[in-house]
Structures are given as C-alpha cells and as structure tokens.
Length: 150
Length: 374
Image (cartoon, rainbow over all chains, first blue to last red; front, side, top):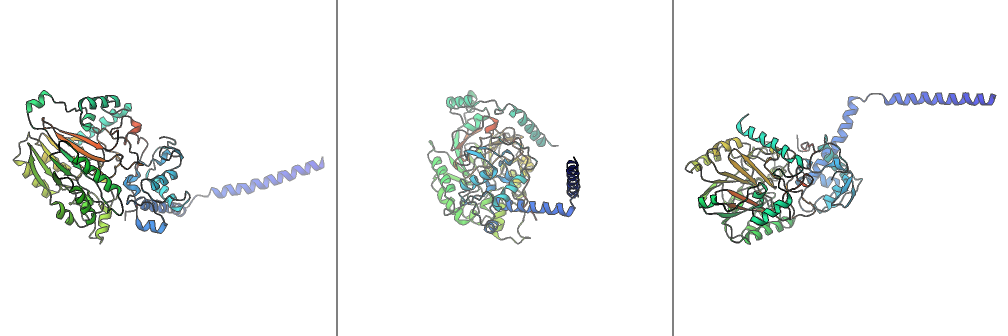
C-alpha cells in the first residue's frame, strides 16, 4: 500500500513537471512573430517567386545560374501561360490526361518542359522546380482550391 | 459612360448568361453544327455565329461579285537552327493557301513574321512566303519591329499604312505596333533588350505600346473621306481595334479615336492577328474578327473575352499543330465578310464548358508578374 502511494506521488510529480515544462513550450510558441520575422519569411518566399517568374519567362541568366535547360525550342512557359493563365495549380493533384497518371503540379511542369519545350526535366525536389511552383501558385493565389478537377 | 462602354458592358453581361447551360451561347450543338456545315458548306466561323452564307435572294439582288482572300499571321519564326516547328507550320500554311481552288484574290500577312525581329528570321519568312505567287500585302507585328525599329521590315515588305480598292471594297492596312512609348532610351537598353521586353506578352516594361497614332488617324480619315458611307471597308491591323485585354496589348490604346473615324461607315470589318485565337466582336457598327496564329495558340485572358465569341476548344499542348492555322475570308455578294478558321484539327469550337478554352476557368484568379518590375 505504501509502495503504491509512493508510486502515485512519483507519477504526479513527473506529470506536473512535464505539464509545467510543456506549458513553457506552449507559451514559447505563443510569442508573437515580430514584423522583422514576418518580413524575413515573406522575403524568402517572394525571392523564390521572383526566380520562378524569371525561369517561367525563359530568362537565360537565371537558367544558367540554376543549371537548367527548360527549353530547346526558344519557347518559354509564359508563351502558353502569360500571367500563369491555364496552369490551374489549384486543381492538383489530379489525373492528368497528357501525363496519363495521377499527377502533381510538379509532374505537369516536367511534362511541359519535356514535351512542348523539348527541355530537360527537373528533379522533383530541385530548387528550380520549387521556384517554378512558387511562381505559378503565387500567380494564382486567391483561386478556389478544386483538387481533382480536370 | 459612353455608348461604346455601354455596348461592351452589355456584351459582357450577355456572355455570362449565354454560357450558363454549359453549351455554346448560340445554342448550336455539335451535331447540328456539323450537319449545317455539311449541308451548306458554310464558313465555320460564320456558322458559329449562326450566319450561314446561303446564296439568298438578297445576294442575287445585290448582284455584287463574291471573292475570297487568305490570311496568314503570327508565324513567329526563329532561325531554323533553333526551331523547326514554326517553320513547318509556316510552310504548311503557305502550302494550304497555294492549294486553294480557285486561288484567292490575294494573301494578307498580318504581322509577327519573326519572333525576335532578327533579319535572319525576317528573311526566312520572306523566303517561305515567296512560294505564294498571288498578290501579297503585309502589315507588321511588334516582333518584327523592335530590334531595328522596322528597318529590315520596311526593306523587305514596304511601308504602312496603305490602301487599295478591290471589287467594291476599300482595303486598309494600318501599323499598330511602331507607336510604342520609349521605354528603352532612359534605361540604356540594347536593341536585343528592347526586343526582349516587347516580345514578352505579359511583361510590364513595354507598357501600352499598341496604338494607331495621330498621324495614321488623320491619314485614315482622309483616306475614307471619298468613300461612300454604305460601301464595305476592311481594315487590317495586327492588334484588335477595340479594348479586349490591355495588359497583353489585346487592343489599341486609342481605339475610341479609331471608332470615331470609322463610325460614319456602315460596313466596317476589322481583321486582326496578335491574339492567336478564335475571337469575334462587334463594337458600334464595326465587326472585328481575330485570326489564328500559325505558330502557337495564346490562351484566352482571365477577363474581357467578348460575349459574341464562341470560344475555341482547349488546345492539346502535346500536339504542336493543334490550336493554330490560317484563315479563309470571303466577301459575299451581300458585301459581308465571312471567315473560316483553317485550324489543323478536327474540332475548332468548344461545344461544352469543360472543353472550352475559356469557359472552364471558373476558379481562376490571376496576378501580373513581378520579376520585370523595378
């Protein structure tokens, strides 16, 4: 009986400790972001949008810097998608007819690079494809999410 | 709000209502459309509007002479070493025009022969078009102009504006590209940089470059002064002569001034390139017909598509001959311009919203680009 009582006290103490420690962590996360932090987050994002915009518009210097070959025909993404129109990032993932499989936006970007543009496809986790994705989604911000729509 | 604004708003509201049932605004189903086309041999463009060129008593009463001409534009040729696709398509358009029987009275080239204004590109285009031996007329596009400010273009194809009368029609060719504001001098751009900005449809640097300009407006007024108000006038331009979508220069910025000059004339038809898509509108008494590009298809912009346009089908970007082509135009005995899109595919017009090049974008909200802003 005494043993059980001691055990209960230990459990309570440990729980209380975790609770207090946990409460501290939660409290730490509740500290408001400073304007400087928010600006830093925004800057990181918009820099990727800017790089994606340049790649999307066939900027040779950015392509060289990123080590990409997105087209061998002279065509750039923006020549079929000015303002990123008809890219429909809000519809992915979905079955994409041209790709003939359940696809992400990155799959579709790579299809356009390889087929109409006759370029070299990007690694699905590459900086270039992340930047292209950032630009396309940023351009379509405010559009209604409608995944799966063809 | 002036009369033209009211007209445009009416057209826009009509567009929303017409597309609500998921079919084309005119209620022509795929089946009836094909049937009517087969029966009448109708011009496809006219058919989409429900305007079938049936030889009627009215035509006979006019007794005017019907004739045809061909249109090619927006070939956007690169040097052959870079891109052979556009060369193939330009050659195919030329070959198709040559195969027309009877031959058209003339070929109109509507601008953007080259992609970056390179003399090599322009000469390539001139060589391809030499194979058409009927009379040819030319107006420039912005891609032909801004590398050397039209020097090579004028050497190869002459100057604009121009006019001629043919079988009771006054034809006019305008230059809507060379009056752009100077965005290059202060920034000390090279000719290649100037051309690069001009060649980016959704760029912000070149600004509202499309315009007719005061000098041509004056010339247009003088040129039409001796023309009967009830006789047909056909005006060729690279850009549409109304406000469709200014951010992509799908307009001329002085379109209201142009309309003022054209207003007294009852039968004005504007035929234009630049938009690379199936497009039709009416502003005041002027009909406006947008022709296909021979190189690639521009998508419809996020807003401003005229209600009178029956949209083309969504293009298969895996087939580079899809969504592009050239055009046949017929001036009927009733002095009306019928048009036929010679698109290298089976179906031209969308029959359902989901297959429409514009009607399916119900969730789309877009923003302009940022990377070319200061």
